[in-house]
Image 1 (tube, rainbow, N blue to C red):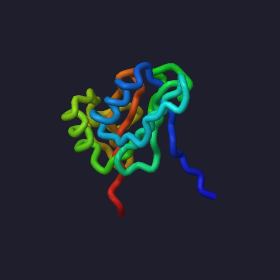
Image 2: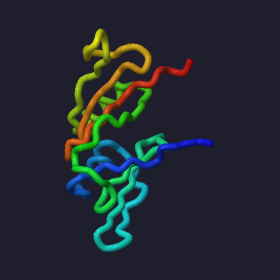
Image 3: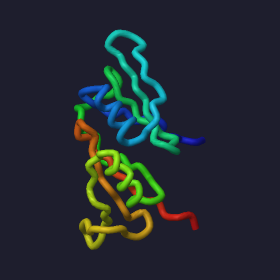
Image 4: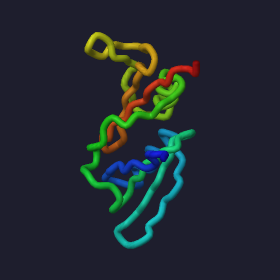
Amino acid sequence: MDWKIELIPVPVTDVDRARDFYEAQLGWHVDVDDAPEPGIRVVQLTPPGSACSIVIGTGVAEGAPGSVRGIRVVVADVAAARDELVGRGVACGPVRHWEDGGWAEGKGGRWNSFVTFHDPDGNGWELQEAPAAD
């Protein structure tokens, strides 16, 4: 039996502002933007190449806006992905890796290169570099 994570709710304060950030600044695709009934708005966005999406909106995500932390988006080249986001106006941390019990600047080994950024509400994301196929 396959178990797949396909949708992660992300609480936000301003749905339009968050949609603009994820679509225009991150380059994610808007799959759905619908208000099926009063008080409910569902906006589903998917990163390019991902099988997993996020949902923002009204009445769809529990938790305080800005409370999501550590969702990792895996990319082939973390430095290039960082450059792309910075070019789109996203404030990103430096490329870093875990070494000797703490963070060190620059790329690390396999699965050990990261960049952090936040959405307008403070929800925290991490880019993680996947190793090249063996």
